[in-house]
Image (cartoon, rainbow, N blue to C red):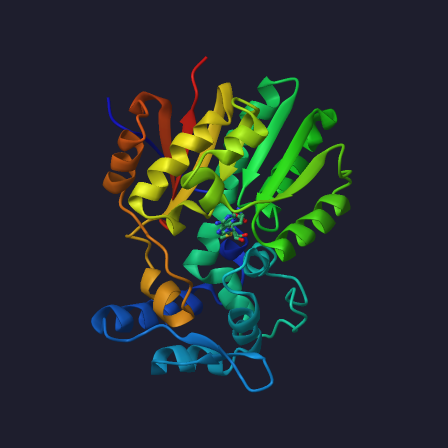
Length: 323
Ligand SMILES: C[S@@+](CC[C@H](N)C(=O)[O-])C[C@H]1O[C@@H](n2cnc3c(N)ncnc32)[C@H](O)[C@@H]1O
C-alpha cells in the first residue's frame, strides 16, 4: 500500500484576471535566471537608524522586481514572514495591505498571478474540501488550528459551510500575538463570538508540540475532530516534523483528521519565492521525503491521502485517525 495521491484543479481569481500571461512570463524569467545562478542571494531586512524595517537587495533581479512595486516592497519589509503577509495573497483585490500601504497597479497582478500566491489559495481550498466532509458528517465539531495565523482558511471554510448551525468550536493557536489579534477581529466579523464559537491561544508549537507534548496535555488527547497545520510543516526539520505529526495526531479523535501542508521542491517558481522575494528559510520537500516522515511517525500509509493542486506549489496531507 502506498500513499494515495489526488490531483485537483480549482478555479482561482488568476484564471480570468488581466495580465496573466505577462506576469507568469516575467516571474518565470526571473525564476529561470535564479536557477541559472545559484550564487544569487535573497534580499534581507534590516532596521534603519530610525528603527524602520528596510530591504537590502543582494541581487539585481530582486532589486528590479521590487523597484516599481511599492506595495510589494512594503509587504516584504513590514509583513513577511508573518501570516499578515498571506492575507494580501488571500485578498488580492483589497485596496490596502494590513500594514496600511495602498496596493498599486504594478504589484496587484503579482499578488494575483504569482504561482505561489495561487498555491496559498489552493491549499486552503483543499483543506476546505476535507473539512467540509467532516463538518457535514458530525453533529458537533471541535477544530484546532495550529499556527492559524490570521485564520483566513479556517474562517472561510466555516463560512462556506454556512457555519453548520454553529455546531462547532474553534481553537486558534499561534505564537504571534499580532496575527492572533487579527484573527480575533476577522472571526468577529464573521459573526463568531469569542468564548462561545472560538478561542485564541498563544503557544509556541516548537516547545509544546515538538520538543514536548505539553499542548496535548493541556488540551487533552483526542480533543478535536479536525486539526489543521497549514503552512507550518515546512518550517520544521525532518526529525521535528516527525514529532510534530506524532503529537498533533494525539489531539485528533478517532474518525477525525489532521491536515498539514508542505511546499514541494518542484514548485514551479520556487527560486523566485525564496531568492527574489526572499521568504524565510523553509524545507520544501519531495513526495518521497514526505512519505518518509509519515512512515517515521508510525502512520499507516493507508490512512493518508495527499492532494496535489495543479499549480504544483504544495502537497496537502490528510491523515485520518481510524475509529
Ligand atoms: C505561513 S503562516 C500560516 C497561517 C495559516 N495557517 C494559513 O495557512 O493561512 C505560518 C504561521 O505559523 C506561525 N508560527 C511559526 N512558528 C510558530 C511556532 N513555533 N509556534 C506557533 N506558531 C508558529 C506564524 O506566526 C504564522 O502565523
